Image (cartoon, helix red, strand yellow):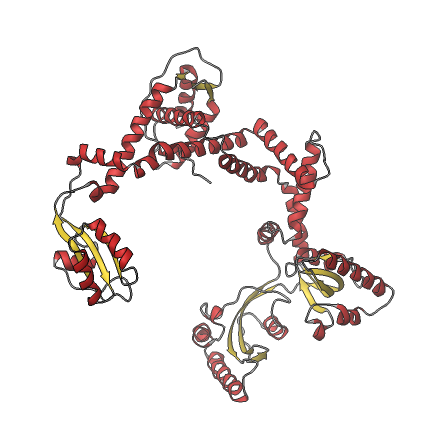
Length: 584
């Protein structure tokens, strides 16, 4: 996306032509009426963005230049290219989203999440993995449908899970996942165990990883989330008895210290914990709830009182000590809202499609003139286009934002062509400008000029000195690049003392240093000399380019003033000026 550039245009006073005023129109440029609302919108936005805002009259002049450039961009067809239209259409679609989002529907999702956050549900499931093969997926759904009928008829859920489920943990748990809180599993899976009655098997549920039958059990109040730190001494699965014993002895010695001096817990976690991620934070873990940690860790964490430190205990990872800071019974409304908004913006969350389908239904009802052609994608696109047109015609805020972006993008394109690219690439023009204005480019201190060469060794240095000594700087740089690519590096320079240590050493009597490029042992200067004034345009190319760009800008504006007519309507302009002066 291109940046809106109105605020960066140079202020130049243009003529105004008195004419019969038009109601609500502040000026006409190249036959196009400019509404007062557009001018006022940009004036206020510019005033808020500037540290030292322009006066009203200054901004009028700036606005005229802005509109002249936009008129030129249109005349050159900058708004008709495929890339431009694609960019604008993308912006329109992004800008439209807040206007079609139903906040009431979003809040209903938040309310559901808040209610679920207060409960945990016992969950079992049978899962068949999703595959790239559509026929295989269809077959998996059919298999789960048949298993559901068997379960309803009295078959054992656990035994069928062990036989058919592709969740690898089924060999140990028979499909039983324990108590699950809201937010732990994919939303469609969560909805199944929260909304299916206890003891009844759900319909087939699709998630991003597979297809499931869900069997909810008992509901209980949420245990909330706990705030803890821990220290881990890791015991790898293949560790021998000696290492396991050493890790146990280490955790015991750490516990003996923190049991007497709990204030040392965080520093000991940083120093000794094998969980390096949390160790950097004094062992601190993110808040977690039921089902998010291994059972042994979760059980100890929830059993501790606030401020209490556990005795060492073992999990599949090794030995732990936990320090509990506190707990939160459930999330606040704002926490839930933030989580819902974030998750529902991800297509992997089924709420994403719930929201899109709700928007789709709203637009279909609003735009009956758009006929359903049987293709959901093209029908949805047609509805969005219809809504974009409606918003542009009926919503001034939307229209002003679109117009600002379109005009700003055109301004970017035409300014790049007429000024920026030309100033940086027009070497002939730069040379002419430099020669004509050479006296203005002066230095307050001498500059070193030449070619800095960094070489792998003294032998390479001697070869380059012998072969390039009589060459011009440009010839030498090219020659070194082509013939010593792996052994040396060369670059032209014009710098003051204190800029580059290697150049300071060779040209200004500074201290020796080492080459900047690793693996290169020496450096030297070709055609080095001290100069007190620029010898050529490239010595001050940056300053010349900037000045030349300013010159091109001024010349371009002169041409635009001659090319396009501006008519200002004084009464409308004065009324707007008085309005904003009264507000100050």
